[in-house]
Image (cartoon, rainbow over all chains, first blue to last red; front, side, top):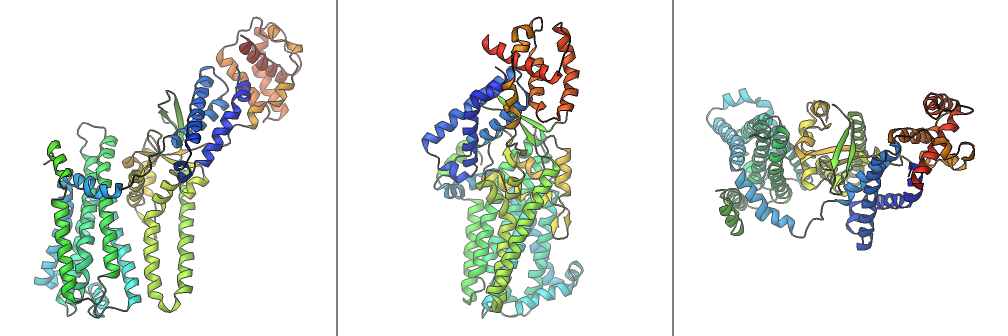
Length: 331
Length: 255
């Protein structure tokens, strides 16, 4: 059989497969294919694989082999499409998968949170005890600009429309910080280390400076609600970045690429957890933090959230998870 | 060896290769995606400006939040909806696949796209320069930027509509085998697989070439064939090769 004959005999099937591939190029249509379509797809795909094999073995024209190769490669990708997301898999992720991943990577998570919170608290302490040193770190002018933003008084709530603008700014800014802390970790952890400490100092300086000012309670009650989520998310992202970086750095008898990919499997789950915290923070920041609720409510809410986060990060995997941890000997 | 092809063994027991997308392919696709995102953000900004003129702060806030969603969610959303393709990638027939040729999942896509923050360094005005990503892509074996290395993904170039006309050989069917019968043609000339392939390739290409150029090329290839068959090369070398190709195919299918 030469290329010409193979084309004449088999072209119908190839065209049929091309049609199916065009239709299944949207994941939605692929997921809603009828059983008849799928079995047709399977048999067409396998027959094209056989054609490719035959064309190669018989040394048919390069054009034809190339064509069949690309057809089979495209079909392969769509045929082995990822299984549809199962119902309840998001709940399962936060209830079991993520806590277990946090346990496995406790060192990195703790390091990330520590590297962010320690410089932040230290800078806040510095601001309280020795303002002049603080101004050497960050110009006073810059800090005063922040002060102006909060002066309007959160007690009465700002104008609603201004809240929206500020919320938008904070969300964009802080999510950017968190994701940068993660992504730059791929440079052997150095980027995460730098951005965690840097942002810890910056945020600490702003909070510390404003704590000394007359508008302190406005600011503190404003950040009490979403702060725990947002700040912890930055620490968690940084921890995920450290995990990634150490995977690239310390390969433990694996190829470097493989070690990195393995570390990334855990790191991406941690960063997904951080993204969820950021989403929660954004919602609180948009609706709760700027509201005219009494300060006690805001502080109380912040306290409860902090306890919840501590519990979730340090203890969570409930019954099922703890049983699995014990069998794995992870703690 | 550096090659732009990446071979995959499939469960069907055959292997096929993907052509890896080059830096230029990916760069151009990125610029298209960037233009789309910029257009969306500008259009949304204008809508906000018109709709919320008096309460512009609310508009700014909404705009910033949408900007954040578009910035971090654009690629993940499309790569999941369109199985590894963003609009820019789709335009240039690029697709993100896992190292084994299987489709990207949510976490793969999230990882490779969050790591854009590292690939895009150092910043260039308000967008990334992608200097790190480009450097990694150029030195890695499979053209992967940092995000691809971590997620275990590659970006491949898919060929579409790649055969059709060239293989239909309408003239071949019209050729009269009588003048150079299959038996006569192949007497003393046992063609190897590689030789048959050469003939098939010439047959496929001859219709894309200018006739004079085809004849020029054919005369180079035809001479050794004619010599082996012990007959002088008369008339059109192109026709001689096409007949030989047809004869080779016929002999095989009849045997």
